[in-house]
Length: 451
Image 1: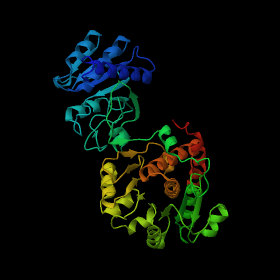
Image 2: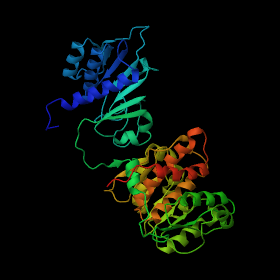
Image 3: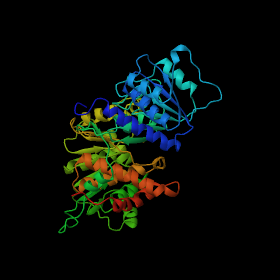
Image 4: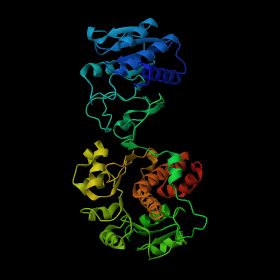
């Protein structure tokens, strides 16, 4: 900011916001736009954007929620023909004049969670009208993705410079609607939260060396499934058997069924990583003990999570959903769903393992506090189907066996799994086996590896 003329970043942000609104409305001329304006820079962004929209022929009305609205923004809006009203003076909108859109400039990244009563009242007057939030939906906790009290639920959030944690982490991410990023030329520090994109995953996906062979590419072992849940074994193996590792081993009660559907899968022997727990029922403890004795990295899912009582002393990835994590750390499931970042970090530290907390936005935390938490944004609600977690565990295991670090194996696996679900569900509902079948196609569609 010190290297630019005063107000330059705000003007860039306001222009990006205005053009996003124009795209949303398919033009500005004749549209009625209400700005909800607080005292901070977000209010200034909204006012300057409103001035640009007014110059494009929109009827712009700014509702001031503070006596300290940005002075330059107010001058610009009035000069462009916009109208300014103070809700504190008892203003009520004119009947029969429905706004086309509301621009939420109430509070920004410096605001506290929750909304003041006057902001709630203003939003109530505008219920049912599409909302565009400036940078973040007002009232959410920007740095943690938590919500505490009333907040804006946006149809579109226009953010500047970089995504903020609340755009990635649930439950706040659910309040953002579509997120549109406007580059305003910021130089950014190392983030505390990050999200992989296709190019990042392409760089991580293991590729065979020219002189590679099945053992050098990695061998993944799975000790999963049971007589009660033989399908879990087949699904986990199908996730592992996607070509990312050189060999897949299976040990368990579903061996004949697994090999009938996957003839290339072999039996017991050494592996570079083991996957345990999926559908293991009564054998979960012995499966974990067996794999732990091997001394290689582990993926621990489902039933085997219950056998944990502290650090394992070797690299591991835990893959619980909120209910399983609640049982593991003796916390309330609702609290975990409300604070996934907090609890993923807590569990990663407690068990000295990477924790992949499944959810709409899967959260992946390393026990190293200096490693950014990763949030996966791929996937679809069709992924909420029995067996999809078994596929994910096998997929992550193959990446771990191929040599990826646990944080990379977990986050790349989650990305591929979600992208495969989106691909497989293009025509409607999808099963876990359908997700597994789509993984190779997603891998082939990744962009060329960066140099």
